[in-house]
Image (cartoon, rainbow over all chains, first blue to last red; front, side, top):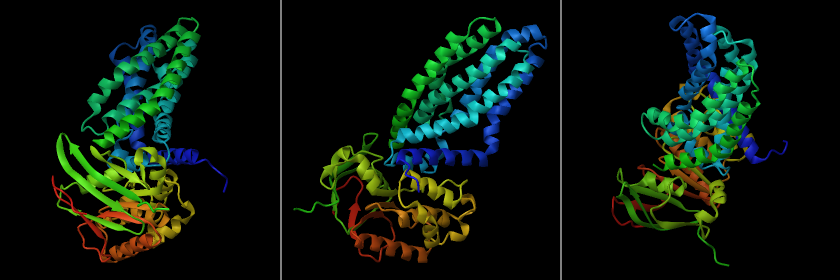
Length: 229
Length: 211
C-alpha cells in the first residue's frame, strides 16, 4: 500500500463518506436547488415578465436566492453526525478536528454551492440577465458560495446542540454573509454595466481566503464546545 | 524503574449548570485491569466516561496518562484509547463495511482486517447492506467490531452490552479478558454482572466514591 499521510487519508475518508451519504439522500440535496429554481420561475410571474425590468434586478435576485439556498442546507451540516455519535468519534480522533471539519465543508460546497453555480446560467436566462453578466455571475457564485459554506459552518457548529437552532443560526450567520452578498451581486451588476469586475471578484477571493483560514478552526472549536454541553 | 499506572484519576468532580454530578472520584487503572463502573441512573457514569474520553474536561481534579497530565499528551492519549459511547457513531445510511472504513481512517488501525472483524461479530453476511436495515443489536455490533481492529491500549466502553444477545455478551467478555491479558485495560459501565470479576468503582450521586 502506498504511504498516505494519516491526515490525508482521514480527510479523504470523510469526503468519500459524506459524498456517499449525500448520494443516498439525493432528495435532501435537491431541496435547496429546487427552491433556487422555483423562486427564479416565480419572479417573472409575480413581478414582471418584461425583460428590461427583469434584467435590472436579476443580479441581485440570483445572488439572494443562492445565499438563502446555501443557508437552507447549512443547518444540517453537522446535525446527523452530532445525533448518531459520529461527531464525538471525529472529535476523539488523533487527527486534528479541523481537518475533518474542512472535509465536511468541502463536501457541503460540492453538493450545494457547486450545483447552484452550475445551474445559475439557466436562471440567468429565465431572468433575462444580459449576456455580458453570465461569466462574472458564474465566477462570483463559485467563489462566493464557497465562502458562504465556510462561514455557515461556524454557525452550524455553534448551534448544533441547540434544539431548533435554525433561527439562531440565521441570526449568527446573516451578518457575516452580507459582505459576500454585496460584493457578489455588485460584481455581476458591474459586468452587466460594462465596467471592470476585477475589483469585486478580488474582494470575493479575499473573503474566501480569509474564511478558509479562520473557519475550519473556529468551527472545530465550536463543535468541541457543543459536545461539551 | 518504577512502573506507572496507565491511568490515574485523582479527585475528579464535575458540575453541570452549577449542580455537582459527582465529586472526589479517585481511581487507578493499571495494565491488565478491567474496571467496572457501577451506580444508579444519573450517578454520572456516562459523564465520567466522556471525561476519560477527553470530550468533557473535569471541573476539578486531574487525569494522568502514564504519569503525564492529559493536556501534555492529548494526541498520544487519543490514539491510545478507544471510546464507544451510548451513541455508537454508526451512520444508518452506510453499510457496516463503509462505517468501519471511515471510523478506521479517523482512528488509524489495521483497516485490512475489516472482513475478519465483521465475521467475528457475526455481521459478515450483512457487510454490504445498509445499517438502517439492521436491528439495534446488530447496529451495536458494528461499533463493537472496532474492538477487533483496535490497537488502542485503553478501552472505554459505555454500556457495550445494550441490545446484545447472551452469546454476544460472552464473546465480548472473552474479548475484554484477552485484551487485559495482553497488557491492555478496560473501563466499562454496565448494569449486568460480569463473569470476569473486575475491579469495581461505585459512583454515588453527590457522594464519595469507593474504589
